Image (cartoon, rainbow, N blue to C red; front, top):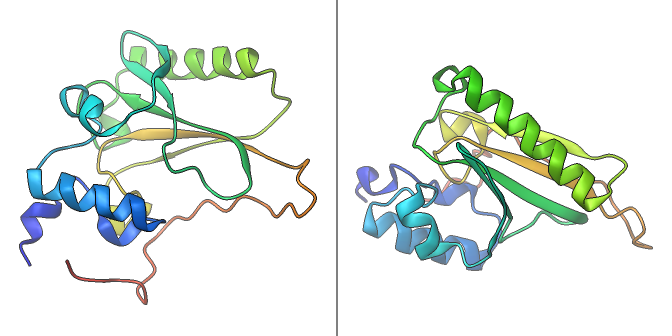
Length: 158
């Protein structure tokens, strides 16, 4: 197994089989799936909002029990919070505020994974934020779980 193939994606952190299969293709191509030139190859959902620095789009593989789940993806490749500029940070909050108003939501969560995927539990090593609203109207509702850290028991080698 060539670990350099997994530079931008971490198959261990895929949550569903369809996602893992798509990530395997991405790994074989050596692409960062969130960089703009590659995003359109793999992400088939139109952008909800676009700023100078970020795009906001629905998550192709939403977490269980979500009413809404969106990704805010930085247009340039970066992996750490410390790489973000003040302008990029300000625009992220501005766009998420616009999304909140557009959807008319009363609450939810905003979370950002960064850096090493064994710590962040991200499937993609490109800084991105999650905008998550639980579907509490569901009769069998259970809270949405946001994982941080890799499950050592789940670790597989591809």
